[in-house]
Amino acid sequence: MASQTLPALRRRGYEIAAVTCHGAVDLPDEEQAAGISVHRFPIRRGLASHDVAHLAEIAARIADLKRRFKPDLVHLNFTGPSMWLYFETAHVHPAPLVVALRGLPEGDCGPDTLLGHAADAAAWVVAVSDAVLRRARVRLPQILPRSSVIYNAFRAPALRPARLPFAPAQLLCLGRLVEEKRFCLAVEAMPRVLAEFPDARLTIAGDGPERINLERLVAQLGLAAATRFLGWVSPDEVPALLNDTTLLIMPSRSEGLPGVAIQAAQMRRPVVATRVGGSPEVVVHDETGLVVERENRAALGAAICSLLARPERAIAMGGAAHDRAHRVFDWQRHVDAYDALYRRLVGGETGLCY
Amino acid sequence: MLTLQSSLLPRADEVVAKVLDGEAIMVNVASGIYYNMANAGGDVWELIAAGHMLAEIVTALTQRYEVTSEQAESDVLALASTLLAEKLVRLRDGDDPPSEPIAGAGASRRAYETPKLEIFRDIGHLVALDPPMPGLKDLPWKGPTDESSS
Image 1 (tube, rainbow over the protein chains, first blue to last red):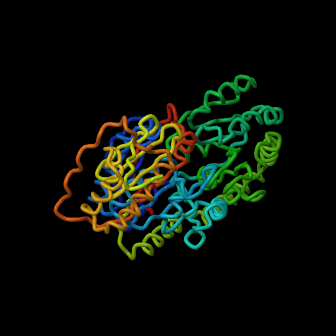
Image 2 (image 1 turned 90 degrees about the vertical axis):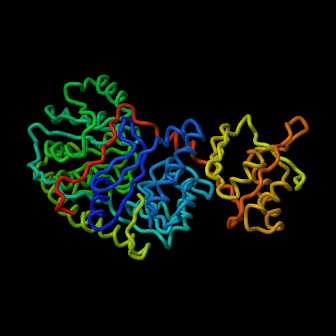
Image 3 (image 1 turned 45 degrees about the horizontal axis):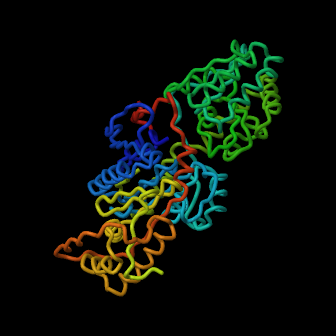
């Protein structure tokens, strides 16, 4: 999301410095992309090993960046423990703080927690869905007067949506292969699907620590011929992948606001999702897809079969999903909302530290 | 009982700490709790780690910051109590080495804020919830191909 939203804000006149963690592969510590300076730090490694010397050095480098860049506002995407570095450097160049919540960590949100500190320090808290906002306001009541929803959105893909394929039907699970996504339920639903639609195929696209368990499960259930693992798919390749898909399957245990469901809607793909978090805000049951209770592989399988059995219904739902995505998850409105929020908080200045 | 004549030392067996540019970062590795103190708090931690009596630390703060003795005494005692309660420090005993003299203050005194121990009890929990992705490619930054659309 940042790789689309930030360039859009840049084109509206913002000067942006993005601070992020190093990922799993070597990328430059610093680079320029779409006019945005990107600064990467190995934060997580230091936190995991309690290496205070390493963390202090990173904090000093971020502090130096803040002294040079002089941000008028700081946007904190609350994604995990690395956010702690914000508090190490907040005193260097104080600026209004926007905290964006994609979900809430389990456990305490009290004043001595990272999220508690963030909620207290924030000039504004943005949630990606109504579900996340409601939950955040219950656990962090201090944010009530300074919080709102700004839906995630994606720019409309250049690729035109193709007709839904039904011969054979192609089912897709797309996302990080982590326990939380519960792609194992989609695998476990396949015997039921194959009994009615023997040519149906399941694609699992993405990577992560659960891949080995999913591959083992596929082998155990004798589904190797009906299942393929694509590995990591670049964002550019997602529209084409969705164009080869009949239904997107999202059996997640929890979701903030599933971006992949918005992307599926943009490509006129109906979604079978679980009733968790913000998923029902994207997938409207019986209108733009089907929503089932979580942890219920039988219900998941039945929902998949019901859509495959009625192609005209699935096609209509895909069309409705497309129209709704255009109305509710409009890209322009998303950028406008952040632009208006930032300008309100800083009174028109445009130096953003992200 | 804690008084200005007390001396404290970091609990070296459980606490790792670093002060850089006046910012103190401490971690109790036994509990996984992270702490930080900025500005005067960094000074206090450094002086505690050097084995100085709380009264000496108060004097040092009044020389380095625009703060009265009364305010500094109150703040140092309160902070010391908190550090003890969080098991970051212990009372110094007779076997500990003597402290070095405190370095002289600079020419001008800095603006003062009551030092505060910021506590983050959930870092270890969040790290456990956020495992690294083996084999997962990071997403390189890339601008949109169609610069005309927004």
